[in-house]
Image (tube, rainbow, N blue to C red):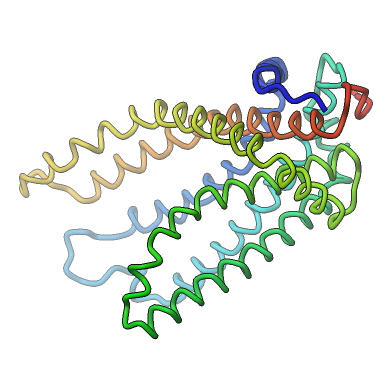
Length: 300
């Protein structure tokens, strides 16, 4: 076992910078947000804000049904894009660690297809387990609160602070399971068991490196988000003068900033998620390999 924080983070950074093709796959889940834009802008363009009559979209239940169907479609598309992203990026990191000098998007997409069902299975099984776990926990908390006339809620408030580190650990298990499914071609349940054993046996190491990575990525995202938030800070000043206040104009300005924001955040997510997955994949390799033998042959 060779686990060096500096070496893993440095190597993950080099892979992220040298193989920019991986950014494209990492940004795929963010592209689902672009599909939301037509439904987001349609009410703004077709609503008469000066009229006292209810909006067309409120009077027509069909729009609510279409919005619900579209929401389900976007959710399914997001899951599919994440599966493609996770499979191809993990495979690309493995090949880069194996010494591949060049990674091509078509090759990673084609070769990553055989891992789609495994990655999807890992996501669904872990998601189901997490959902059941939190349903039971919050059900018990609700029951205690009802029995104690609300006093139980107050006493159990400190437990909510444990949710964030718990979610961090669970996400680490998922990432290590995905790495196991791709690197060692394990089945769904075997990959989840491998990920769980690795995280439980190296809990503080993985938690520490996860905190470091998440803090760095959050700082990067915050630096990018601030310039887009500055115009919104001045919105209340324009809204004070009712004669100059135009709801449609304000909404269109907000929409325009959103149009600029999505591709920028897609780029940030591409870089950040590539670094994140590279880190978790390298953690898996360092914990399961004594050296750095070839993992997968590069077909690029």
